[in-house]
Length: 268
Ligand SMILES: C[S@@+](CC[C@H](N)C(=O)[O-])C[C@H]1O[C@@H](n2cnc3c(N)ncnc32)[C@H](O)[C@@H]1O
Image 1 (cartoon, rainbow, N blue to C red):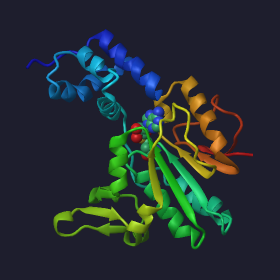
Image 2 (cartoon, protein in one colour; image 1 turned 90 degrees about the horizontal axis):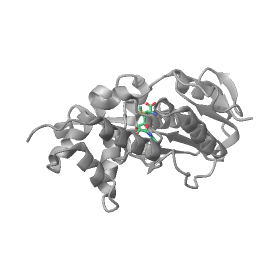
Image 3 (cartoon, rainbow, N blue to C red; image 1 turned 180 degrees about the vertical axis):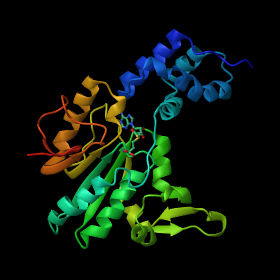
Image 4 (cartoon, rainbow, N blue to C red; image 1 turned 45 degrees about the vertical axis):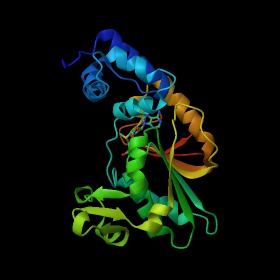
């Protein structure tokens, strides 16, 4: 079967659908990415054009394939202890003031395959002693959420995890599991993964002491960034912290938070 070419108007259909659905803004330079990532689905369904695939996913009965397309078009790059200064800041400035008795609540929005929320879980478990805590981790992609729930990673992902946390919270696989590690069970049980599309109304989740929204706003246009942050802020406690990535900022997006350090904000 001949390989289909992604026509300009077909690319436009996928672009506006992805923007409408997830708020993700694909530049014209992303055309090869769209055709590359979706080509295996055309093959799977023996379709001869991207237009046919677009009609298939947008057909009301095809919600499963719609999710597959969404999963393929999101970029999920992440790693343990990414931007380590954020975890140092939590350790030195935030966690020592956690109120004993009250559960410390943290939301990792756009958590991808779990490296960020498990990094946070290791940090909290190691620092908070008997103070209870919980983490909600969410993403739009079901594929990465499934991976995240397993807590099972290849050994080459351990880079960046401090040695004492590695030996405390990561179980090294043996036999058939050689070359992999598993996040320790009690740690895993305290991270709740759920599918949340930040571009839609949010579910009831209560308020958080800390929200991480890192490396996802880069995919949104300015209006979407404003809407997403405005939707999230009611879920941050007064005095709570909001983290974005070092390459992002809330400049021109929201001015209700106080900048504490580059990429770290606090709700008055
Ligand atoms: C590059 S990863 C960032 C992961 C992690 N926060 C980090 O900094 O390493 C971006 C994630 O955002 C998710 N995402 C994109 N659009 C989203 C949306 N509208 N709602 C929720 N998650 C979204 C993607 O599925 C992807 O897993």
